[in-house]
Length: 170
Length: 266
Image (tube, rainbow over all chains, first blue to last red; front, top):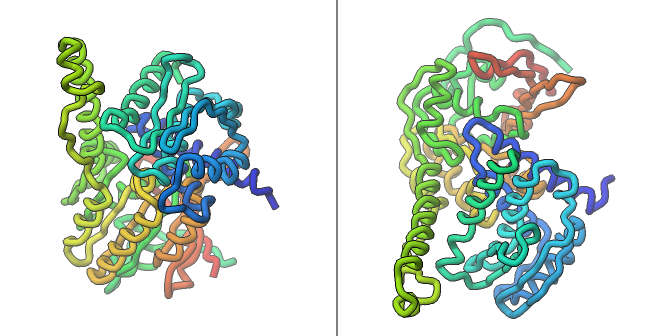
């Protein structure tokens, strides 16, 4: 009987595999990789988070996500700021990145997973990527109340990664 | 486990059943999909579910809700396989989605242009993010799905390809509620509702809920055997027709989806 961690890792691998397949199929678009990540993130949230408080704070959400999802998945974060509606973090460790050769697709998928997890709890929020300080290690900013500009971030990230995809040939 | 090879005979049209247009699949289903049935088509990556549903779409009398490819891309594939192109009522959510994405992108570009042309004082007046003061709401694709399946004529095939799109944007419970409403409508219309979903992405619990809601579950799998891949279609569930549960090997060739051998489980 596989452990909880193994089951979760297998599920993630299976979802990423499906995302890659969609990308490589005839009319594949990088957007489909993000979408599969989002669907997987929403699925994780629905299946793993048993009780969702109607007025969660950012801290409460992070505590649940770290305990029930990130921990078992082996994903590690360093938070540089946590307020009641904004959290800023760096991803330190991501097992999917270590096993995948498709770096760009993996980054896009991973952004989608975090976005799906976050929007499941904060539908008015948005996940923003800040590459200004360090391009190789961008900051992830979770905003519980997104501005109209933040709402365009998803498309910007897809565009940025599509450009990268063309550059590194993945 | 009884095995049966396919015989090259055409399946007789059966009252109350809706033909898929793929003769051997109709034979596996012993006449087609029972009218009013909701069928979940669970596909593993690489199993060519896309080709199967497009081929079914050419059987005529089909409403095709597409989220992954545009109408034109689907028609291109149909032409490539030389399948007939009957009347297909397309609901092109993919086109709508990508035009929304493009609008968002244009908005971003126009903000950049505003920033580069305007003076600092003017920018401050507009607001630090330089966004237009009014924004239009995004389209509710789940509502479009619900509305467009409500007024479908009787005994029609509705293909939703795929549920993955809605599950990336809405909570699983919201999607389930919408699917249930469409199922009830389809039952009333005595049509066939085909819902495509990628296997292994949305979690076991959700897959089980979908399997519970469906009247029939078809699963497409790819198994690696040495250096080659074998594809199998399993009829995992068929409400009130336990005899139809079985498995069949298939290949994709120039003519499309070809079933080779049925193995009955019951």
